[in-house]
Image 1: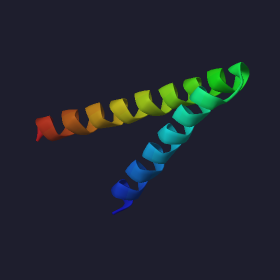
Image 2: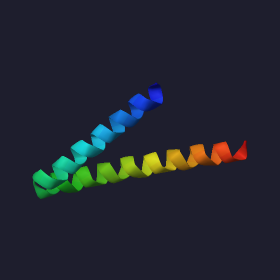
Image 3: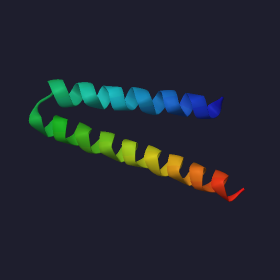
Image 4: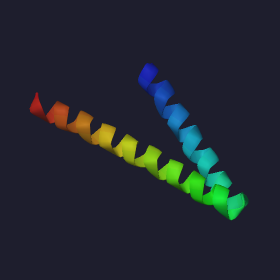
Length: 57
């Protein structure tokens, strides 16, 4: 249940970051893009870690 809430939270953050990139002035767009990329990389690394852990068992 907690993982599902975390996924929803990060999906919402990525959606908000995408809207900001499209509609905001340049400095806010760059900031939102960087935050979105950090969230995306963090999520991919967590997924990779989970996959690696499952493949060990």
